[in-house]
Length: 244
Image 1 (cartoon, rainbow, N blue to C red):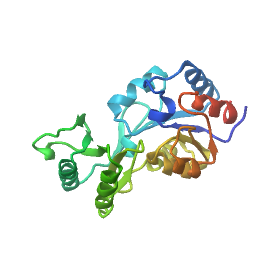
Image 2: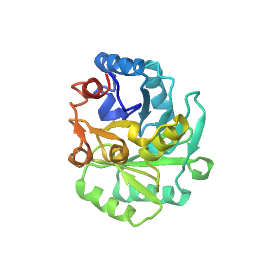
Image 3: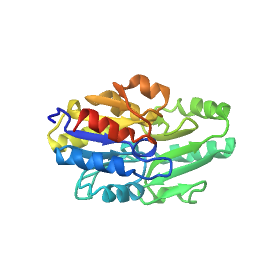
Image 4: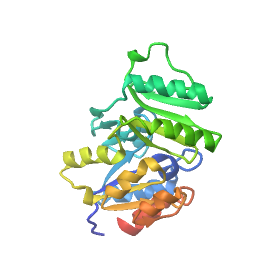
């Protein structure tokens, strides 16, 4: 099948991965067939390179990776092309917000992922993303209101009850634009799939934006097409319909 889409950008959690963080055999086979058709497969994820690369290797992908919501872009040889860290002052303020509201949190540096604790000396690392997990929607709203006053922050989520914060201007679409320039493609030749707020920009800016059946409603509204859920091999359904 001939297609104008030459690059497939896949979110991972809630999209490519099922509820057990696994890639189904049906999705694996569909991705392999898309690759045989010459389609570039790019994992575009909020995950760090350490928790993304093993999945890419399991799919035998020799391709670019967009990680930490676009904070980092890696080439097909595993070399870092871009890195966009948060301001240290903003990381310190978010740590204080987490303490004040007693939320769980995680934070991604260029070396590792920290959970519910940070090192004493924050300046020893480059901080790429800060995430909050909430049990109370009222607390989530209050934290969002405070963070939204800071023009240096890009605020999204990867599930309805969390919040992900990157440096302003950092998002998956920006990372994909870098990949497209390297490959001589345009965003119009990209098919992007995702389920959460951190996927909206790439879904809107891609030539074809696809929301998962389990996606948040605002993501479905932004998409051109809605596929099955991540438990129904929605990735494979879309690949079969549009690419192979």
